[in-house]
Image 1: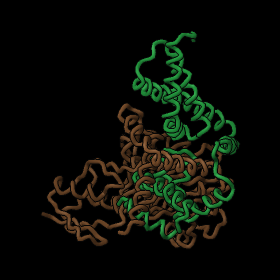
Image 2 (image 1 turned 135 degrees about the vertical axis):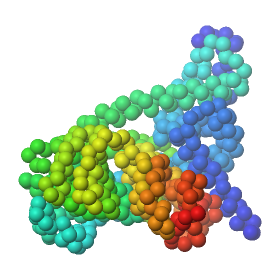
Image 3 (image 1 turned 45 degrees about the vertical axis):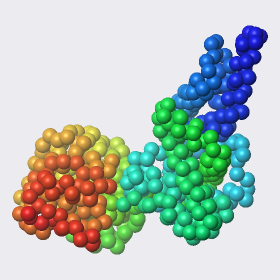
Image 4 (image 1 turned 180 degrees about the vertical axis):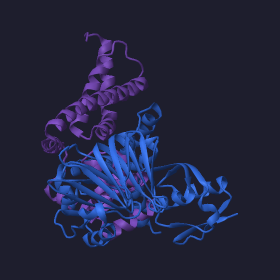
Length: 193
Length: 320
């Protein structure tokens, strides 16, 4: 990058984008990558790409470009990861579980000891089917249709249970009593028939 | 509703929205519209904070890993199958004639019986590496020894993916019919008047009373009619017979009574054909097992019948 006023102005624009949208961008990426740590790395890559643009456009265009670039980088990363996952699975499926667990543990802003115990309690309060569906989805990374078959429920129920489980844990960890949590969730979501 | 409750509902709505966003971002395509809506939604700091909170819990479940399963951990992989030895013993008594003497080993410690409830399917791994996918309201008893592998389909339907082992034949008994697998995958459907075996891989041999025997390979179907005591082999689209494995039932010129019998294994509410004249009507089509109610509505257009649905445990099909 050359040291001319134009590029300085561009760097300021990028810095402004960072301040304004970084949380939103990292959140979006974290959802796609299942890891806040990786989300931050990908976001950073995207900012670097943005800085390297030869002829940067208006701020609104840059913002779209930033998110678009970051999403593409996230897709690449998931692809690389799935190749790794396949190799691991072929050679040592049981070890991979532990590796995946260890990778999750390095996430920043991770839940601490007492919070984790509360989360475990919340999960144990869910119905067997709901917990199983949620964990097959979250931990085993199964497709919705595979979970539906394994648990013996419709795909719509899979979506309902995964959503319910997360919201249930959220409310319980926010200090809402178990019975209250169930009542409140009943108010916003209906079980599909 | 007082102010406090209103505030709680607002939080609840935000949590709900945040969860929906998580699902969308996790799996949905990132088109411009989605991106624009996300930017708009996440521009509200309270929304974004809620999203991060859910993200944190989502990650927390990953941190817990295997511990998240808690007490239910040992049930992983076991599916919903459960032991029903007493039932197996009584069913086996019905089987015990001639070639089926091998099945008289009641109380054998090698015997395992698995069953499923209405609308439930289950994956069952057998100790030899074979896998059985059990349809709803179906029961199998498996007896695996050093010399043989015997499975009895006592009721319903099952798909067998058989591990190769030339030294130990894999035999499935379904009523009067006996299917011998030759390194293979196949579906066995046991109806009230027939046993239907559909081969998706490899080859099988089917034996029935009176020295009746037939061989079939991938892409073929063997049907045994209980009334005629006859075996017939035909070419078939195996996707039709195995569609149930992905939550869909497919029928080609199937008498309505058979269709209804199958659907009743998927529906908590029983469907009853009231008029005998409807039973033999040939049905061709697809039924999503999660949408049987919608199917019933459509049925009124296809056949001269009406559906009497009083909202109770049974739905009745009557002639128009």
